[in-house]
Image 1: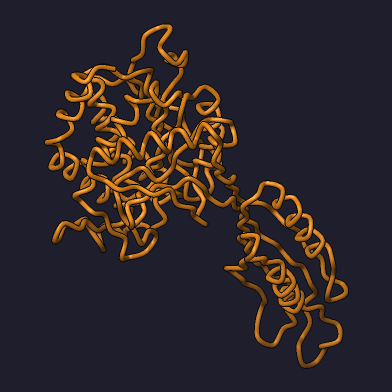
Image 2 (image 1 turned 180 degrees about the horizontal axis):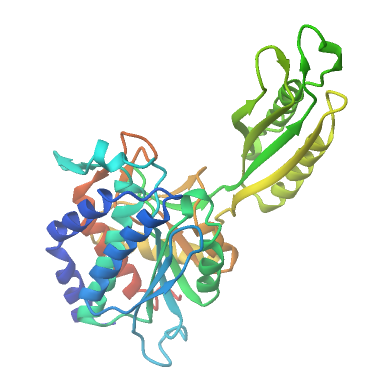
Length: 395
């Protein structure tokens, strides 16, 4: 890596804030909720259009129900590089889907006021996608990447990556390092650890009966649900970082009918991989037990994320990023997050992974979601510097 190469890459990025904002505005103003495949793929078309315009080839990995995965490549690296890893991929990752309902961009379009950008998905994580695209374009224009760069743009992260996960894991198996551009923390930090998560639904079956004239013949699914909710919430162990939340419940037929059915949806978060099996075993015991005699219940896992844990190699990547960011005028801490992300999948595959390296923002999944515009270019430059210094970091 030559100083000239680094200077040229950074210079290419330095004047791009206006272009970044223009692209970000188009992406934010395009609907793209996780279940809106057409919308997520419309955002993908914008990604492809930018990359095509910069001569970067893009492969489409079709999604059956959710947004397609896009895989962009920028060649780089010399055979037999200093670290011996120069032919392994440097993976820049991000998701295009958001959590918002159809029509949200019309109700809350992109806007910038006093250096703060707002709009659905502006930080989580369309700004990170824009940043990744411009970093890929910078290395395509200037050259000098210490290995092949791969930009992976997935379409279903917000619902646990049911179709994206195998694509992500396949990339991780051949990755030298992974940089996931979820939004930088409000304090400017990046994420070095995340909880794992399991998202479940429990269906409960009882027996309907008239609640006045034939009460004793009924078997209340709602009564069973109430007992199960209490038992499941009792599994929370804050000291170990284990939380259980029944976030949605439904059930019953009418106010004067003993409820024949009910449903609850459960969110489990944990830190240590071994904790998952322990807690899931206890959840299955609760689901299998009939607190109200005669009821039956079944559990289905609808989505899952793995925890992001920091390995020795990931710690080296973090240190390299901190040094690179400092030269962009950024002070970066390594933070732990209770939220889940696709970075857990890459870490589980053994790839050194750093998350939340995107531009700084906050209040994701809410109408108050925001992005600090002034961080777009410096965070892109920090990523570029970190990429150029992988050999120095021993990665």
